[in-house]
Length: 147
Image 1 (tube, rainbow, N blue to C red):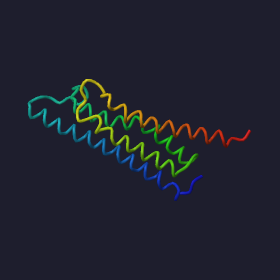
Image 2 (cartoon, one colour):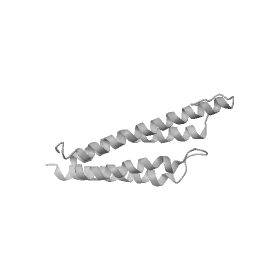
Image 3 (cartoon, one colour):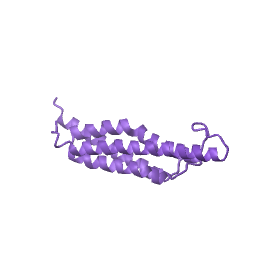
Image 4 (cartoon, one colour):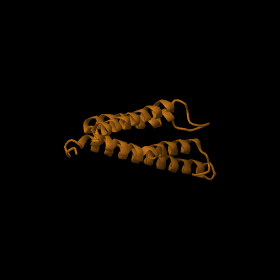
């Protein structure tokens, strides 16, 4: 088991990832408040869940995409840090979090007509990081098992 000193990198990556989640959640709240005011100024009713406002859809997609992947990332990331290397987990985790941080910029401010294909670069690159970590974890476990 790595020492607490060796786990400082993974701890920081985890904290940054959770901070990113709350930044994305705050962004969604800001968009909701802004749209509520905009709709009210136009004399319209803002329906947060069924209104299909493109700006609200994008804000929701940004926050929920990060949340959807959070459990898998954190489990794989910490298994990697413990089983393989805390040092390399820090690098892989930082790359993964960086890719997730790009998501809102690649998605854009509004979501109209489905998910843009340009998101596939960010999404599949992040999946690739997770897959490499899983393969390395399995490799490490298989190579250390005693018959």
